[in-house]
Image 1 (spheres, rainbow over the protein chains, first blue to last red):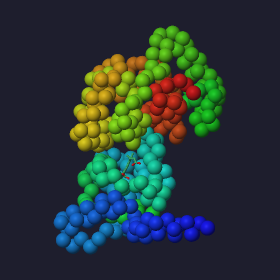
Image 2 (cartoon, protein in one colour):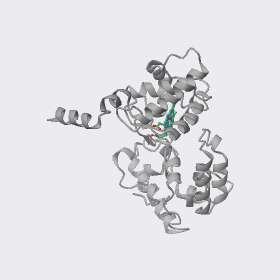
Image 3 (tube, chains in turn purple, orange):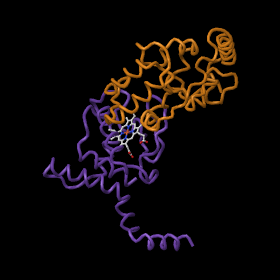
Length: 142
Length: 159
């Protein structure tokens, strides 16, 4: 029964299979934008890497504004499918993994706002377009 | 609670003799509430501005505008690049809308202080053992909801 419903839904949607592969269309657009920027900045750019994204996520990094947050994982937790916790205020942060939170990385303004802030706080500098794409790629596979 | 006579298990004092400590603090609170400016800030108007709720609420409870006077909110909004040590920058139009909301609905207090937790009324009501603030379930003085369960609605009863 269940597989039938899924198949029927995919057939009705038509794009269902493509979407399942590339994820949400808005997220795909955000990634395409970062890929174009990365290519412009780095002639050798050959695509995003989930491994590099994981290393960025887990850290630890030096040079950030706060000793308490040497990694993205300091707030987003080491398990990206788990609910995070703001290191200082204790506020819950919904999971970063797309599998656990399908709305992730679908609002370009929100994504840019948070990169701008969180990268500076953790790394002491802005993230590059490649780092942003790596980060989203890592979490889209989670 | 935090200093509550009927704490939820994770917020109980873990010190030996914690019951006594809890009762002592409750008694002090009762005295304080019975005198001076009882309930001055037990209810504040809830946050009714969507951008304020969203943007402030990503990292901490969106504090009600009535918790600080307008000059304090102005300083906070002027200093988002270094918001208590962190960058909390916002797009200019969003920041302007939030500034407008917070300052027009602001409360009273010392406009030189940007921390709610340094305002006189706050200190008067939170004269507890310092170890309370570092307990895991509390974590920081800014975590109102650890003890005031309905703080996000602007209701600061000692639940």
